[in-house]
Length: 294
Image (cartoon, rainbow, N blue to C red):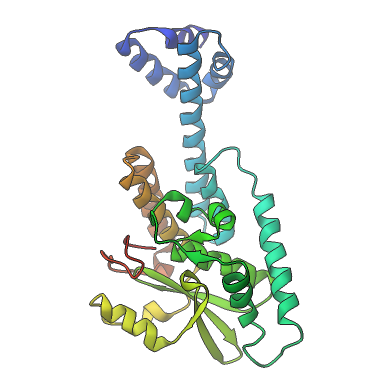
């Protein structure tokens, strides 16, 4: 291993290609030598060792994500924090979970003792949309920062799915009954109050929507409503859709290796979660103006 790593400083691209292939095939056994080379005085060897370490670490993240995404039972929040490791590694989810906890506490505080009316669950929209200013982003719409949950928590901007996920995670902590509605190109959040329901649009600051609004949105894109689009979407369906959003973002930026890895995970999910996934046609010119899944 030391010999192979020493050759990372070779000027020949042919040698570098062969050495990289051998180190990749060696798997974990190459890591100690690579970590040592990452501190090597030779700048070329040090830089290449660090790039290989980053590549190996990214492959490990993809393996973990694949393993989780193909479980029979999924939790969307856990899956999205795993996905965050593609943004930075190591990644610490604890500050973001605490932020969601704090939001839920504030929502409950604002909800007060209201019972039997939508005033209580509507505190969710009031606090997240009005007070904190969570809103959809029209600028650089498909940037990975708008896909990643933690980035949206930081910036209060994101894609429809990402913002809906934040609303949903806060609502779950506040013990509100909610469920996402996964329409083609747009995600909404359904609030339950007994047998009654209300629809919120997190991308539009938590604005209330009606079923007729949703049908008009579909008609705008030439789509005839299907009953399955209005059913409560599962965490598995949203996680796959989130993965596809990030895959598309990578494709736009020429990160083809990452896009292919995410595509393989999305395909693998079909074998396990086919019955709970929502089949949607692509939206070429989405309501937010961009993208295909959102």
